[in-house]
Amino acid sequence: MNVATAMRRFELHLRRRGLRVTEPRRSILELAWSTHRHFTAEDLFRWARERDARASRATVYRTLALMVEGGFLAPLDGGRGQMLYEHILGHHHHDHMICLECGRIIEFRCDAIEKLQEEQARKHRFQLAGHSLTLEGYCAGCTRQQAGAPETDEAQAASP
Image 1 (cartoon, rainbow, N blue to C red):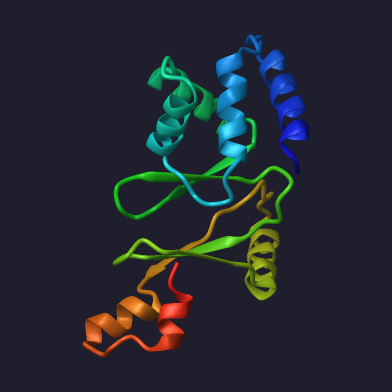
Image 2 (image 1 turned 180 degrees about the vertical axis):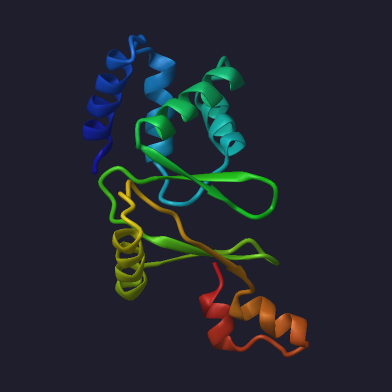
């Protein structure tokens, strides 16, 4: 989904909640939409300050919460004591593997896992509204380093 469409939906979300559509809120949504990687609230605040030195940390955090609430962004526990975010509106669902050593995030989709989750929900008469699956462990590069093996060209090419 492009930023213009996301912006129209965000403005509608704000109005439905009785909130004003302000330039700082619009700017923060644009910044979040300008990246295709996972980011922290502090990353978003830093980007906002680079764009406008008057940007407020409180406005960034409140707008971030509004974007999550409206289904524009999804939070992801990065496993290092910080929450990460990614924009999801208009994107296909996917799950994550997070390396506990280097923090690398690998996105994946597995139809078999999706099917099993849906079957379990049906079995328990549970109405699914959404889900998040995060696998934690060690990427190939960190596993090799822990074992003391030198990195191969293949492992280096797979690094973020």
